[in-house]
Image 1 (spheres, rainbow, N blue to C red):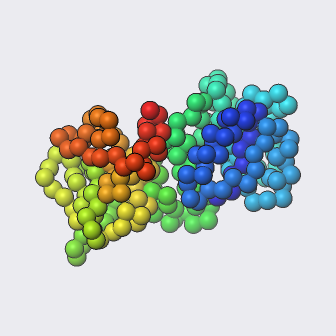
Image 2 (cartoon, rainbow, N blue to C red):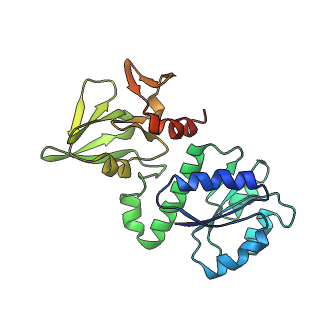
Length: 241
């Protein structure tokens, strides 16, 4: 998914560019401090989404987006909340208020990918949302366990544990676990990324059920889950900590 970033503050551009680098299906094809400089790349290249600031000296983001013909999808990124109504009247995918936490960026990019998928294959996009589902209405998934496909409500999942060749899905309020031969990669493609995050090579957690964080451990009920060193930065950024 090709992205461009428009913001008169270079540091704001750096933040969004760094977020994009963490997602394997996004590529930043241009960054601009002057919106007018972006017109050529929008016309000549396949741009899927524009991340655009609103208050800029040359032309406002609202005016710029409104003036574009055959405009790509776009997300407004701004320090001001008062333009939200105008932004959504232009059919913005999302409206992100600075400082933008990583998990909100993830939600915006997920909505964008879902909309793009619907344009190509609307039926498949609705049934099997890509990039971890990321459908705000997604309530459950199916996983193959032994000889059946088991329906699991997302809110019932506390955490997922990797054990050699299979995964163990821990269900809230019970001692029940579901074993599946799915890989972490395949399972993460089914899960909404604004709710589930990998925190260790052997663990994925449901952020909605985290009770507390104690140094390098996550507490879910009476279970303590380690935070891997390579996942620490992304996890704390996701939570805005």
